Image (cartoon, rainbow, N blue to C red):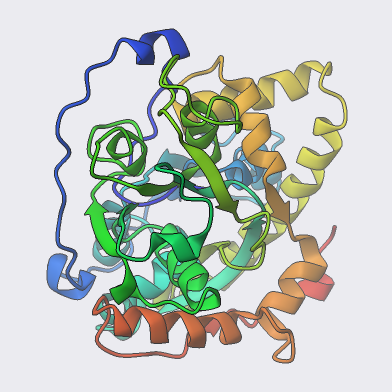
Length: 385
């Protein structure tokens, strides 16, 4: 996925360019609870004609772009336009910035994974106006998020005592805790090297893996492909890391990372129709994306991939990477949203995941308290699909 916080997945650099790159020593950070890190005053949501909606660099975000008319600004005749809405889609992989915009009222929405949202529960619940309400699940990650290792490490258990790079506050934090737990390990069994970015800078896990003292790193699939010589084994040439190989991905843990949209409580109460209309537009946009991707030769399909790659990856030519990111996301649709948000008996429901993930985050010292995360009381059965 990224995917996610404090990241700017800029242009995916070509293999030949990376092969000549000199990597600077990365800067590692010590994460603190976001409630201590972000200090902004809560403001009312700005009453603008155009609503700002965040995106992150993930295949599922093609759905929002499609719903908006394959553009950042709402296009006439798009699903969002048909719902009477005007939106400006803004790529914001820096979750700190997303939270600041959300808290101050610049945007009523957060685009995050459940794990990212839960890392911010303390600050989001400080004021009843900003209490988070989950309104829509876009996808599950089913292969787009990976753990790459070198030095002959081929299993999670072999990470004991090793140095592992991961983006702080990002979606891979709960992926990491899940992998360790299922392997009978804890956070204390590895040496975590927290990093500010997800990709595209020397302060990101993919670049850190080039360092001799880093044994493994969490990253999204396009970086894993590059560093492992096409998911075979890195040779040290053409941008790969010698001996690097992907040891696990969310293909084998497909119900761990859930990508969602969250809305402020006060905005949901005062603009319920707009929120429900946005959900309806996303649902129809999702259906249209599936239809288009069945025909790669269709002009609108090519436009969707190119525009999405430009917005989400910073490179309009990276259509292959964009298509791969979407393929590595499991789109959940209407039934999936009903299960995730409304079915308490569903093993992977919002309530179930929230309880498990918050416990792990509290153990890591990233949150102070645990909260019930509310799902929107929208009648998803009544929506068109």
